Length: 363
Ligand code: PMP
Image (tube, rainbow, N blue to C red; front, side):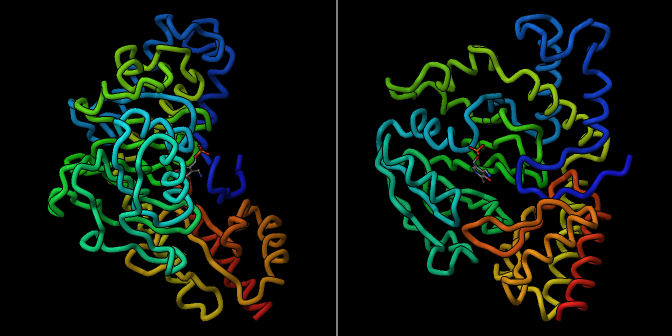
């Protein structure tokens, strides 16, 4: 079955083979007589699913042994509270605000600790990244928070900041929700990474947390037990009922990623897809992307037509061609094409072909 190309920023397109496998296994998982949705999370079958998902993810992202992998709930915004509840010790935390998502993290943290703005790219309309050498990091901060891919503004760190080289001992916390598994992660620079699943990993409802062992066990007394990383880790993500079906689907995505060549291959494809679209936008003289070339996101590509009155006709024509969910986020306007791991190169080509035709007939 040929499906439309889905450019949603999230929940987003999943690899078709994954959906097909989930459909085939819906009524009877591996001869168990049960759907994964109907299994006890404490049973042998789900235990296998969880173990395999964690092992595959560790392999894909080369997660070192001194990090725990937690499958949690609450989404990215939940982690905006859960991270400070676990890591801040009620003290100083430094934030780098490079778009909507890190802005929300900064605001939420004030409920639990003493956050400060180490750097911001607000003055550029979040079209650039403040160079790490200019960050005002405070000695004694419990951690430094960065969103490594701003889904709405389309800004991505092409390299993780090296806090130690900046004279800062605090662990780096990264919100990598919208580009996880599209590029390798340098764990030597990271203390904790979190990601909502609903872009590159699986359906909404699973939140992945990968945390260095020494950061466990420091939760504030008010931290809910179900969100205390130490308790979640000690119970292998099963202190309370985990989002079992979402974890199963994420596991199928991890196996698909491995079959397709892993994260290195995903990175190669992401560069190829996004370069195709950015090069077309830049060369068109008609469409515009305002993000500095040094930090354009490979995953989320916002772009504008010369006249907002063309937005609706553009979207309608796109839908007719089977190019879905291209409308930009309301805070930015225009269009946004999200090109996650599941987007084939042909999807990016179909988008560019349509954009070329639309410009020729409306330019
Ligand atoms: N961080 C980033 C980078 C995101 O893209 C999103 C969702 N688009 C969130 C956090 C919030 O995630 P959730 O809706 O799962 O709370």
